[in-house]
Image 1 (cartoon, rainbow, N blue to C red):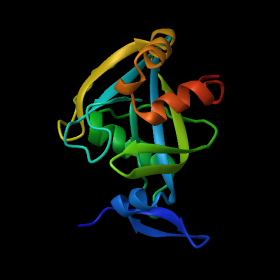
Image 2: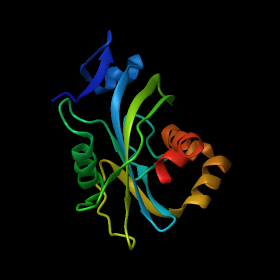
Image 3: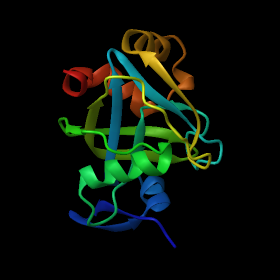
Amino acid sequence: MTDLIPAWVEGRLQPVEKLEAHRRGLRHKAVSVFVMCGDAVLIQRRARGKYHTPGLWANTCCTHPRMDEAPAACAERRLREELGITGLDLSPREQVEYRADVGGGLIEHEVVDIFLARVARRIPVSPNPDEVMDTAWVGMAELCARTRRDPSRYTPWLRIYLEEHAAQIFA
């Protein structure tokens, strides 16, 4: 089955195959989640089999909603599918739009609904190896320092979120 995502084509939101949307750099819907414990954020290292940005560190979870899927439902689904996380109270943040080259001739042009979850303790995760090769809890100041020191180890969108939208996401 083909992965269809909601993308704008000729001014209309319509289903487009995910890889095609990235090849054409079409503006499309996305969801990103940050799980925080105190000042530490849960990040994930993308699996080597991902079709773009394999092996790079990203925020807790990110994906594309299905055509008629509500952003919050999508965020909950992907937390469960990627990391085995359920039952979090997801707080919607401001919507963010960015465009970034993700390599291999692919462009992410995303309109992102961002969610933040705060947990009292570092929760256990069960990463799906097809999606995630590693996870880590990292203090926000340290994560910002790492992304500046060695940006090639982090996804473009994580760097954009931290550099341009941190106040909107983490306030």
